[in-house]
Length: 305
Image (cartoon, rainbow, N blue to C red; front, side, top):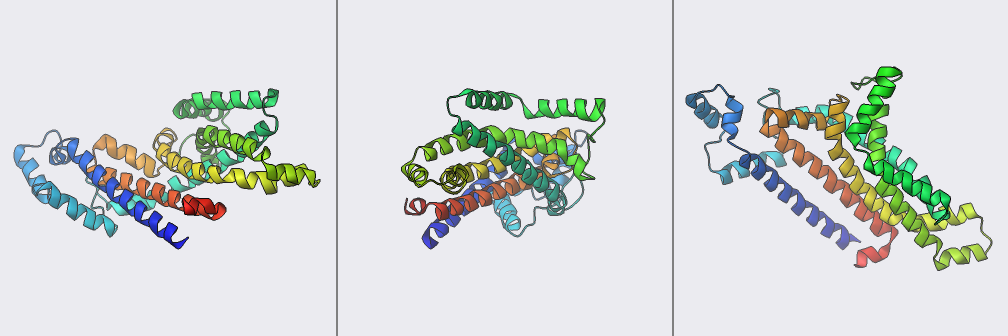
């Protein structure tokens, strides 16, 4: 197990370094950073002054090494648009994004697991087909469209829920529901297929032959084995949910890291874009690492492979 964990840590570090290199390269390929910072009405002298002030007149390799060295210490520089330290901006807004992601995943799991289990128990019958149709319809609906429809119905016409801001738990109901529904299809399908496979296995037949109750067979025996792939895909879906928060936070005007990234892209605030991409990637890698370790604990064969 120790070798498995060390190997996963090494892979995670390599992935983070690759993301760091790619995010830096892409922002430099998007255009002249000094011209962007100086603004459309800046003269050539102004642009050159900005280039020297931000160290953009140095070779790219030196800029990358300097940025990576500061990023490892948590220093991402200063935002030219917000006029604040980038690390402080991300720390201020991360709780909103993290809260939205966690609540969204809990809603997605709370809906997906019962639907997947119910579909597996009634495999091939009307309930199974109805659930699969519901999941497919949900998958076909874009998150931003669903968010706008909820705002129009529950925020504008009925006036039940606030449409923007993050002042209370009521502000998170609609964004959380949209995010939860966006991760539901993958989780529900995996729960269904895992449960079908588990219910057809020999150990479940043995449990039935012993006269155990249906609840005990489903929860204690079948669900435990079906949970292994669900844990892995849940980690991936949580990463996707955090990435998807860029759209949802923008629609509901939630001032999280996703909304910050969106504002920074519009304003071409390179320092914030690089830091946001790196932070989302690190969170994604950490969650994937945790899910790998959990899977290895649930199934020892994964450690050996």
